[in-house]
Length: 251
Image (cartoon, rainbow, N blue to C red):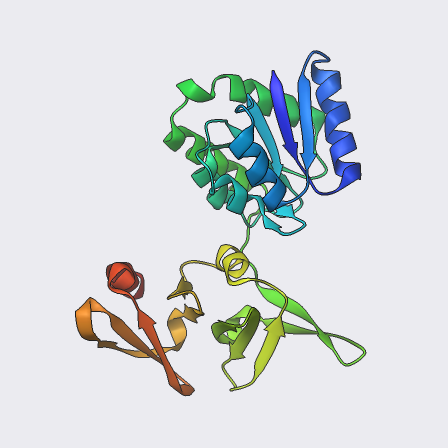
């Protein structure tokens, strides 16, 4: 079996490689690839491996970005210390989801599953993943720990009115009218926040359902969202997203 490892920490790669060799010393192991850019280049130029073991957080972004950039014909086992990305994993041929530190028996089971990947329905995989999430007490982000003076302060997600990004600077706009800068991309925040409460309106805005004051029709099937406490924020939802947005608000 040819296995590609995507991992930006050498120590984690060495442990994973050792576990694989203990499972089957005949495995051919490629990698590690440590960045989104490097992974895209490899997948474009090299034959598809039998299995990809991919850390989710890489040095320059998320492995989802690389796996979604090229046609992918290999099953993927995602490895990470964070469990907030589990559902997203299945958009990219995910067959399993292992939390670090990786357990050897769980890794062996994931490899066996990879051998049956082409005969296993995606829906069945998703059900298994949901069960695993329940066992691991999966939760969406509830707070942010942010630098403050010579220490840190906590900002609760329930106090976020909306999130705004401009010139690669992401700000939490809070219900009291203040704002905080967070060192996270909009794509990352979209994954970490509860989709029942937060909606990615466009590239610049993520909005909270509880903070929507009213929604107005706009030209060409678009919508404009007006938020409580932020009268100057007029957020445009595209025609393509309008139906999904209205369904989200009508739950």
